[in-house]
Length: 262
Image 1 (cartoon, rainbow, N blue to C red):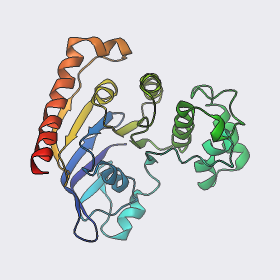
Image 2 (cartoon, rainbow, N blue to C red):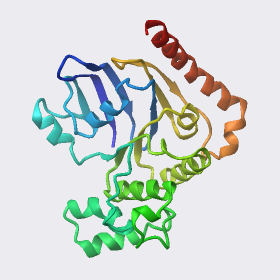
Image 3 (cartoon, rainbow, N blue to C red):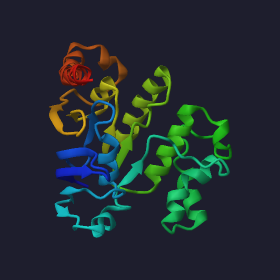
């Protein structure tokens, strides 16, 4: 699935302008990331792309077809793009497997068929042996893998992920990056990731968009031409360091500007 956003803006009640004139694009099978300062509208952008919020201006196109204006625009997007919010939102009264199948069940898939599909994937998602555990019995990394499995099982060709590893410790987060990259290389879904971690964005992505402070705008886009498949050893190379520095420069400018206006 190919996605394009053209001139998106979002203004909330009370006059808060979250986004202004945001344009991005993703080709089918690309892994693209967005980085930017806190409060710049990254999560708002993902919610609009997933059909959970209506843009105040601009349009969203899937495979070249624009969602219609008004409430129908949400109807045209809702359910077509897999969405994973910052929190895993696992339900404590459901087991790991039952949480993973929730999206399928809501889409009308029979419970037995949904369970069979989830069981076929638990090993690849590092959850074998934990199918019947409750979320409270899972580590942070396992909870995130369970939430990602739920998103993957929904069967969408495109997914938007809002800081899925933000709450994890450094070592677990590093392992999860490499794991997610392996899953993406196998499935080649189109993924848009929001992250505060520049190194994470470079390691995973084909392209990284840098956003400004609120109202969020696209400051620059950096193509990541590093070879694939990638391993963690890549993060120690000069080419990786150069790309990381290119992304950090505008972010540091944004931070200085925010401090100067405080």
